[in-house]
Image (cartoon, rainbow, N blue to C red):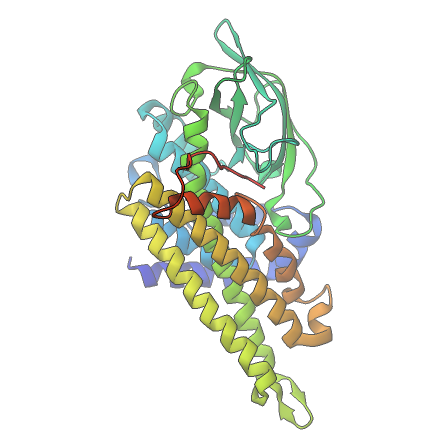
Length: 385
């Protein structure tokens, strides 16, 4: 299947199977149960998983196209597709050993949803300031602590949980099954946007994990987080490009039909120019995101990967917020109504400038990677919101 055939396939799926459910999922802050099964059946939850493990056998670019096209219709559903593919599956593929791949990838391809549990109350932008602790015991470690703002938590079956050593000197990333004794998932957070992502808090009260469940090995949590979030930021960039594209299309459609003063409003320069500006920015954000994805696929240096992913996420989030704002204004009073899709996109867009690196965290990440900038440890900023 070519890139464009894959795009067309996902776009058709999103139009036929997601759009009509979007408003209800936004209201309930949950992913529709039937849609969950359909996402797996369509291959959208196993895009990069090798065929040997039951996946589609695609590449990272396919992942980003899938996220983008789902986000064009519902950014909240795209968060679930993004976190599962770009943070969980991608991390296991790139950093997990053969045992972890054999144990977890088949289930992640068939029907188990993955979630990334890094953030805590005091550990948002300072993401590795962890209070969740992995206490060594006979047979492994006991995890104790709380995780906040975990996207997909309500419907996830597998969590990548980050925990510090008791002395706080190192961190580890453990794969934890939802049914593990001591793990509790709260009700979904009543958040502003991307509500279908079903974000929630986790409580870990003596959850037993083994050393073999640690991605990259015990003590590798910091490097795992840094590498995972580089890919994760590309996923957010793709999500924001899709959101912006959806907002642009709604603006064009409304302007072509809405009449005022005896003319369709798309004949007015005051409507034409903002839409034209949005179209230009969306194209630029898409190009930057695709460039970053291809650079990663071609094995760019860690510094270049860090810079490109941060730039793509930063710019795409700004473009999405702008595009959604213009869409509301083009629709006027109708766009300000909770019943209209552009109002939802306006709320959804704000998340892009917060999770997996706020604007300032991304700027702080980018600057030290630029030629001639002061010598700074570019691996320091993580930032999950």
